[in-house]
Image (cartoon, rainbow, N blue to C red):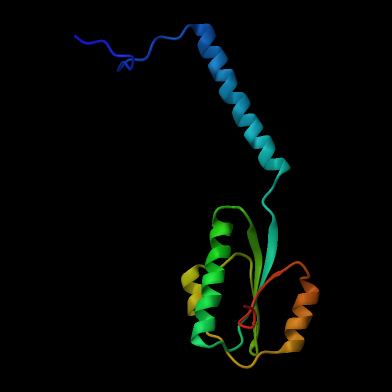
Length: 134
């Protein structure tokens, strides 16, 4: 029978070692909880201009949204609310739509500059997705 440094059965721990190990785990969980409270996920509005885009611009817009959605899903940044605006009006979503929903939505009209300017004033810290952006 060969002896190995890695046994199928770990060495038995003394009761004192088990208490110390348990206290370390509880302390680690407490610190993680405290850090998550001290450094919450930043919440930022997203303003989407749904005026008409060429097919190439539309793909670029969807790619930029995909990057933001990944950050939202990884809790690096929370997108709330998501405001979509076009000539037909403004739609407010409390949470970010899925990538499929975002890609399916049509872009309509030439856009309303006054409406977008008003929304930018109302949400000054909003990220803006627009076909006009590079």
